[in-house]
Image (cartoon, rainbow, N blue to C red):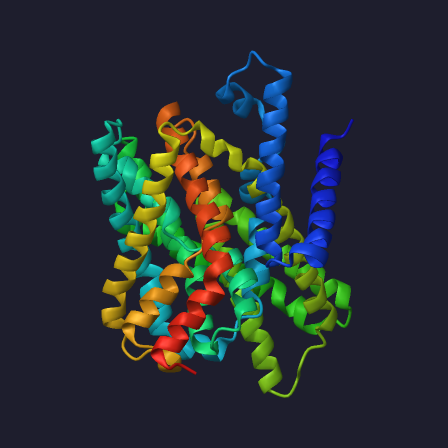
Length: 422
């Protein structure tokens, strides 16, 4: 029987019924409810499996629990479409206004966050007697340093943050993926004693190569998008542009994530330019299609993250290392924001530096990209280290999505009240 269709039926069943239950009963934020309930279902399935196979150990049960391949789903499948959907409606005038803040956060804060996290986790590992080297811990830091654009655009926007701060959070999360990928390639080459060509070479290759691909593909595809009168063809053209960009980047070893964002930003910019010239495009169906596709893919992603969360139990010293990973992430995030905020200058919406750091620290959600990068370390590090990296990443994703996501509104209201912000 077709396993793809079986998986599709299972995932859509969970998306529909868990979403409906949340709508009528629990009324959590939609994405948070999908992950939370999926974690509970995954835990129940593991428990039932262990009871039926009483001779199996916990680790054997978890190893055999491979219902869905999250890495293939993201990296080989839909990540490019998620990133395009989040960026094709970016407000370009706001980006120009906040370019300094977004650039410093996307580059500087991501780099410092990876370094701070790596050092903290390395020190903790030494106390626990784990065989973790500093390059491995820095690689781990690069995995969890980038904030997630999917979480930022789908969760934070529901809390009605001020427009300036909201756009900075969204812009940083969309643009820091390339920096995170470049850091991951560089630190992983150090960890495996392979030659990468140096950080700046890796950064130039990952970032500027992706930007070039995005520019060229958009230049080829956008004229069709602009001049066709058929709404379906506009949608097909955008799908072609983003998928072609991603495939080309995979071939040339550039960052497909950045190329996808570049395509989305360019489509948004050219669309706004046409409107300013008095030739607005009829894009109602385009917006509806990408909105529905974005919601569907996000929903499936959060269900898959929840179902595969049980992999955290593979981590040795699971409780203490999960706690260390979460605390190191918060310290690394706040420290990197503290250093970066010194150079940002004036902040929007009346925010001072302390309020800004608090809000962005708690609003730094992690998601599918971090998990995919963690999964890609399989085979390059030993099994024990791989389980630590994957389990620690899951712990951070779960904590930032569930705990930080569910309390983000209260944190924002508290900051707003203490700072007398509008």
